[in-house]
Length: 250
Image 1 (cartoon, rainbow, N blue to C red):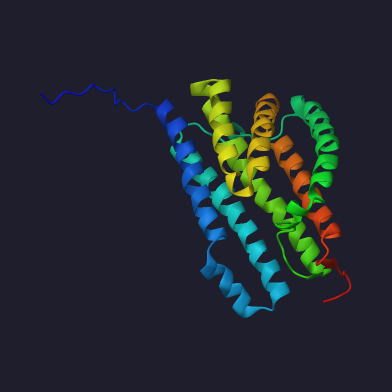
Image 2 (cartoon, rainbow, N blue to C red; image 1 turned 90 degrees about the horizontal axis):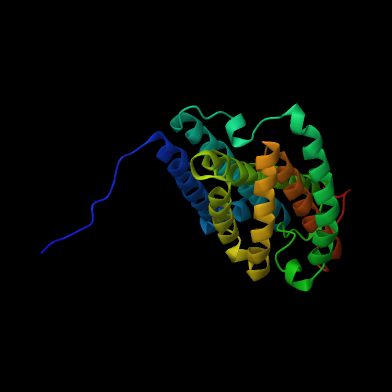
């Protein structure tokens, strides 16, 4: 006998508010990942420029791709498909009533994570991958391109994870299920970077989610994440034995 359990397939606006952000996070992170890892895209830069410029321009391209694919496009799609969703609804806003809370936690977390990031960045296993721009000689142009690239990328990254993939889910699911879904996917994206970063993303992701919900904005997560990345890459630049900063070279 061909038996099966009946399912309730009714589609509601609340389903849209949960499903669309999760699918956007999946689709656009995958799109970014394969664009960033594409050998054909990478080779196009190395065919056009010398090694140092090719490395800088390729990594800057991947950062800009992350900004658009993980930040801009998912935000636009969610705003179009989820009824009543606004930029404020994904944390892209400013509240005067939580401004002091945001400032205190941003400064406090930066004071905490910057020394940790600086210490970790000096380790040999970190220098294998960082700084991501592998140019042997960093000019002033490469230096600032690196900083701007990280800022753009992490703004898009946090707009996806603490904005699109978190804030709209709180209403239909509640705070803790929304945090659990967010942290699970956020931690999973760090798997290629190794066990340490994958495990470290769990408490960090949970804290950033809770602070995002409490402040109503993504700015704590954005600024703290940028501070960590800048500290990591600049410390790695300083301590890498084969990479040197020469600001006056062109």
